[in-house]
Length: 395
Image: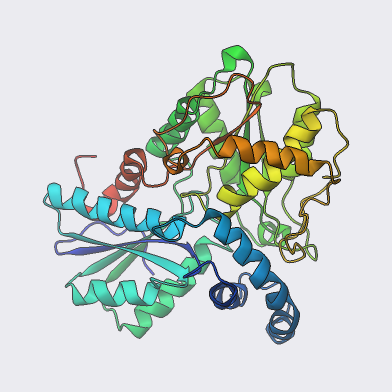
C-alpha cells in the first residue's frame, strides 16, 4: 500500500478503523467476536494449530461468559459504546466534508466484527471513490493494532479488486491538534496542578517481543505524554506513565503496569490530593476503560489510599482472568469497588465524552478522564490528521 501520496482529483474514500466490538453483550456474540479476534496472527501467542485447539476447547468456554458479563455492564440502549461512537464519528466527518464541498466518502470499519473492512472498501468502490485513505484509530501505532488493520485492509483491497491508490496513516501520536485535545480534556475534567493533582497516563500494554521486532509504540507513548504534559505546563514530578490490559502471562509485557503504579501513587499521595487517569491511546471509551478503570483500577487506588494491603504486584493476564477477581486482591477491596460504583452512579452517560464532565466531589480522590469519543474536539483531530490526504487546505 502506498503512503502519503499527494491528493489527486476525484472522490476520496476515508476509512476510520478500530479493533471491533461484539454485536451483543451475550456469551454467543462475544464468543464469535473473540474467536475472530484471538485468531489474528498478530494476536495469538503461540503456533496457530496449538492455539486454535486451546482457544476453542478451553479459553472461549471461560472467557465468553465472563466477558459478556462485563459488556452487559457498559452496554447502552443504543448498543455497544464503541459502535455508537464510531457511527457518530462517521456521520460527523461526512457532514464536515459535505459542508466544505469536498468529494469525500467516510466509512467506519472494524478489524473484527461489523462493519468490516471488506464491507467498507466495497461500499467506497461502489460510491465511485478513486482513492482510499485508511486511518487506524490508534494514535500510537503498534504491530498488534495498526498493523492488524493494515493486514485486513490489504485483504479487503484485493478481494474488492481495488485499482486506485491507497494511503495508510500509521499514527498521529504527536499531531498538535490531538495533543491539545487530550490536554484540554484533562483540564476540562477538573485537573489542577496548583491544588496538588497528579496525572497518570495509562496506555494499553504490548508484548516486549514486538518492541524487539521493531515496534516503536513505547517511544510514541512517551512522546505523546511529554507533548501533553508540555501543553499543560506540568512539572515532571506531577505525572507518570504506566501500561494496562496485559493479554496473557505467557509472554513478557511492556511495563510498568498500571495496578502496582496506582498502589505506589496512593502510598505517596498527599492528604486531599487527587489522581487523574487518562488513556490517550484509546480513541473512544471501550471495555478497557468503561469497565476496567472503574471496576478494577479505581478500587485498587482507593484501597491503597486508605492504607490497606493490596495484592496488585502485576497486571493479570486477560486470558487467565475469568472475572472473579482480576487483581487477586483481598476481599476488603469489594468495599472500595462499591464506593467507586456509588460515585459512578452519579455520572450520566454523556460524562464519558469530552466537554460533558460532571462537577467533581470535593473529596473525590480518583478521576478518570474520558476519551475524546464523539466530541467536536475529536472530529477536529481527525480532520487535522486526514487533511493532507483529502485536500482539506483550510485546516
